[in-house]
Length: 93
Image 1 (spheres, helix red, strand yellow):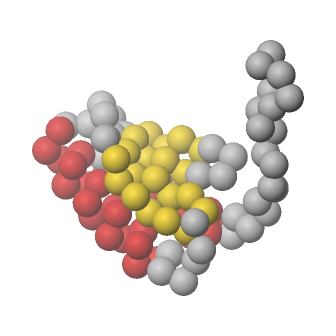
Image 2: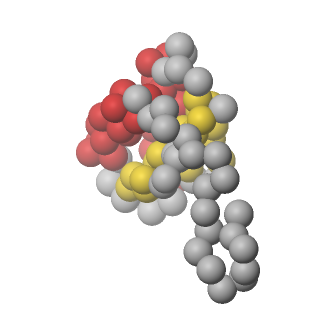
C-alpha cells in the first residue's frame, strides 16, 4: 500500500519467511548458466527467472524443466511455482 500516489509502496504485512530462496536461487542459477539470454530477477518477496532473450525453443524447454525441478525441491515450502510468458516465478503462497 501507499498513503499517497507520490510515496513509495510499503508492504502491509511483512513476510519474513524466505528460507525457500536459499533453495530456489541455486537451482535458478544453474538454469541461467546453461541458458544463454536468461536472467534472474530478485524481488522483495519473489524470484523470477526470465528467458525472453533465450532461444525460444530451448528457453521454453528449460523453463518446463526448471518448473518441475523447483516444484520438486520446494514441495514442502509454503511457496507457489508458476510459469508465465517467458518467466518462471517462485513466490510465497
